Amino acid sequence: RHPLLPQWELLDFCTSQGIILQAHTSLGGHGKEDLLQHPKILNIVKEQQQQQQLQKNQQVQNKDANVTTAAQVLWKWNLQHNVAIVSRCTTEEHIQEFSSLAKGNIEDLMPSQMKAIDSIGMDKKNQMRFV
Image (cartoon, rainbow, N blue to C red):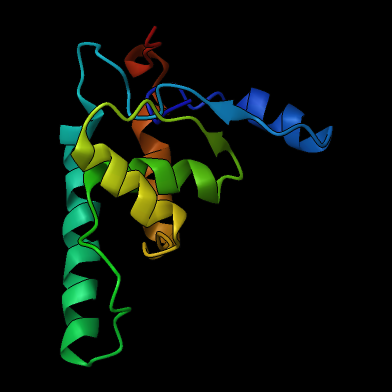
């Protein structure tokens, strides 16, 4: 499950039945469109980084917090939709990104950010399955 194939009906069904949906290839895999470079995702990364800088300036930032990345935004989107994620972390960078997320060092996405990501896959002609 990823923004280009959100599977809303499946998520609604699983939620109504108390089934935990699990996302595979939640970063979009190796298809034609790279979700890690999607303009809406990069915009949210920029917003999150600006918020982190503001908090740092006000000295309220978690000392262990990392700079938010596109991968973390995509993972957080699934988590905030109550979808479990499986990540194939093959690089040290992704392991650190995932570890930071698992430790709770990444802020929740704002409702407007969630809606922006939700809208990526709304047009069925843009939906894409990665295998």
